[in-house]
Image (cartoon, rainbow, N blue to C red; front, side, top):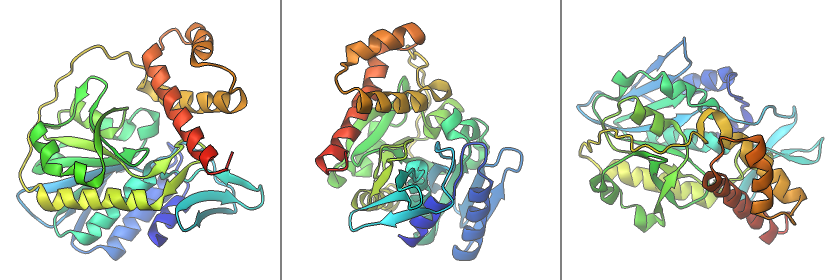
Amino acid sequence: MKLLKKLYSIHSKSGKEQKMIKFLLWYIKHHIKDCKIELDKKVGNIYVTKDCAETYPCIVAHIDQVQTNHSKDFQAIETQDIIFGWSAKNKRFKGLGADDKSGIWVALKCLQKFDTLKVAFFVGEETGCIGSSKANMDFFNGCRFVIECDRRGNSDIITSICCTELCTNQFLEATGYQQFGYHEENGMMTDVETLKENGLNVSCCNLSCGYYQPHSDQEYTVKADLLNCLALVEHIIENCTDVYPHEYEYRGGYSGFYDNGFYDYFYDELYEIATNHPELSFNDIWEVFKDYYPSINKQELQMTYELVKDDLEYWRTRDYL
């Protein structure tokens, strides 16, 4: 977990990802052989190709985080079960940025293990998928599939995001996801959705990778869940050796709630309300929000509220709240 804690220690707020970019370029150059590394200096995206092959498995991750700052004494504390951020001076938790540094870690571990792989690291996912919207789509030529590990929890394989289908049933079955305790779910805005909208013509998915309470100072990683995600990704790379074509099809009905960072903002606001005013029901909250934010879809806001309640319950059962 040394590499993982190093990633957590590098603060990479959206728009200020330079330290993470510098570290990734250094780490890959000095620790992983036979890699071609391309940096899009205008955007900040990093593209890595290992080996020369006709087809490649592919992993993507984003290098920015929501948390606006790190304390100077920030530490990633590793216990037997979890990793969390801590400031001893302030005696408080500090967000890890595990969303999506855990995904970066999975990508680096796979670059170390496998002889043939493509990896893309994107900037600005948390502010509207800025990097992936400007991705070099030629990089994905020859990819068999694309995996992203940018989902909270420990058991979701995201096969559709709002009105965007991500993969075929053939690819889903080939992943063997069920033997790792995963189940199919609909997800939220992230880079693979944007890549599909940009014309990515192979199957992709987004996987839970063991982080919880994203975008908050209470964010933490369950190590066993992250390792299980890595095992699933390795299984997919080893067993999905075909190309899995899939064409983008927009099905309509998207309310835009998850555009422009709305989810990021409302998660934090709902978390604060649920913590400080547990007596309020969702309908009470809805009555206020719908007046201030007329574009909100009630069902989507309730989905976010349910995620908040799940996170609060996790901490309560472990006597942290």
